[in-house]
Image (cartoon, rainbow, N blue to C red; front, side, top):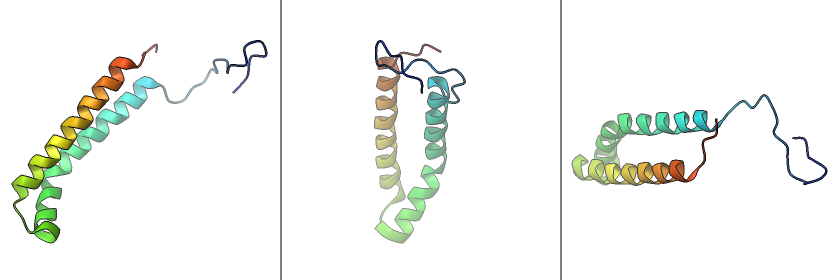
Length: 83
């Protein structure tokens, strides 16, 4: 990254490969993937490890996913999307 000699800040570099919109899209895809595998994962965890009801594991996972989505929404609101 080039440095401007007068301000000692990095100057804008052209040819950026990943921007904020791409990062947002990757995050949404990741949350969608987690949502799709949650029923399978809760059933497997209940059968192999916890020896409990898959519904309890699934409902707890949904609550944690909800917290992730709320945190992502707050991060998007705070972040400036200048692209």
